[in-house]
Structures are given as C-alpha cells and as structure tokens.
Amino acid sequence: MPDAQPPNESVVLEIEHGEVRELRLNRPPANALSPDLISALTRSVKAAQQDRIRALVLSGRPGMFSAGLDIPLLLTLNRSDIAALWRDFYELLRTLSCSPVPIAAAITGHAPAGGTVLAIVCDWRIAAEGNWKIGLSEVQVGLQLPPVIYLALRRLVGTRQAERLGVRGLLLSPAEAAEVGLIDEVVPAERVVPGAITWCREMLSLPRGSMSITRQQARSNLVALFEKDLKPELEMVMANWCDDETQSVLRAVRERLAKKKR
Image (cartoon, rainbow, N blue to C red; front, side):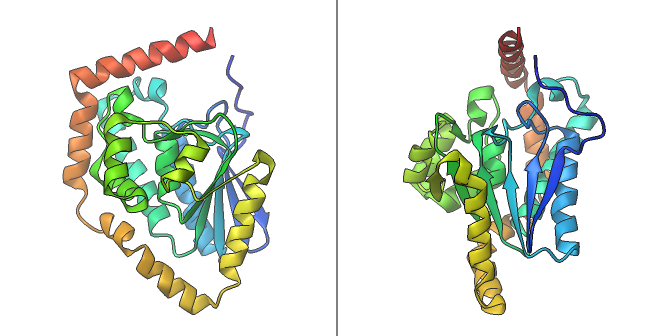
C-alpha cells in the first residue's frame, strides 16, 4: 500500500540552511507531480525570492526524487483541468528557469520523466549513487517530448545525445547520466543534499554582482524558451494528451502501476 500523506502536512517542505533553503518534495510514495504539488512548488520558489533567500536546493525522499506526472490521477481529470495542469506545469518550469537565485537539484533517487524535467531547468544536478533511473521517458508512456523540454535537454547534453535520449525515452543510471552531461556529480546517497548545499554556498561565496550577471548570460538561452508565446505549444501538448493512442498507452501504464500495488 502507498504511504499515506499525513493530515495537513505540506507537499513541499521548506528547510532552512542559512542563506540556502531546501525545498523537499513530500508527496509519498513517489513524489508524483499532481496539481497541488506543482502549484505548491511554484509558490515555494517564488516565496524564497521574496524572503531574500540566496540559493535553493530542490530535493526528494530517499530513493525517490520524483516519479514525474501522476498519471493515474491525471487520467481522472477532465479536459479543462488537464489544460490547467499543463499551464501550471509550464509556469513552474518558467519559475525555476528564470529564478534570480541559483538552484541545485539534489536527485535523491528515481527521477524519470517529469522528475528529470524539474532537474534539467535547475542550475546544477547532483545525484545519489544507486540503481536509480533518470531520463526523459515521456515517449515510453505515449507522450511526445514538448519542444521546450527537448530544447532544455539539448542545452545540457548536446544535439546528438538529446536526440538519442529523447526520441527513445531512454532511462539512465546516475553514472550513465553523468557521462552524457545530464548529471553534474554522483555521490553516496547521504551526501546528495549536503553536496547540493555546499555547491550553493560556493556560488554564494563568489562576488555577487559578477556571478549573477554571468549566470544570467549562461542561462539566457534557457530563459528565452519561456519568454516566447507558449500558447501554441500548450495546445499541441493538449492535442497529444487527448490523442487516442496516447490515452491507450497511459491507461496501460495506470494498470501496470495498479498491479504493482497489489
């Protein structure tokens, strides 16, 4: 049986480390991305900016960073609610990508599909050693890889690797992900969050103005993805979601997940 969410407990925990704030995904058992979690994480990132936090760490539970979109839940939503979810998800990605402060992704375990999407729009990625799976596996569950997400992947790993990984929806081990540039560092599990905090503090030890301006230049191509009109892309994403083949594959995924819980 899946773990129960404790009553009134936030789906995003905020943990202070001085000038660094850790945002820990807290929706057991898999930190799957629901409308509530997407909205809560967006609010937490924006609130950190207002609170003058100087760097963020995005983390998950031991063994599970995020399993990506909550497919069983999403299949219960009507078309209007699904459209709202995709708009909110893009707003979360925009908020992370355009953050004025550095963000380190502490990948504490599995991070397929949407879990990797969150990580690739952060500044830096550190992952736990182990038999975890990381990658943009959308194609494997019947979803096309949205252009914005594909371009964010290509920005990290280059044109050929992005094609290889994205078209086949490949999932990699942490070590394999590091080899292609999807992950920056792989460490023992107990060092993932401390390592992310250390990276943030190293960034904050640099002269603030010069670091911030250079960071803006380095991330300008990522930020530019979210400055254009994304309505046509969202319409394309919705059309793909509602496609008969996609829905059939997603329902099969739901059945496989249900069998695992029995």
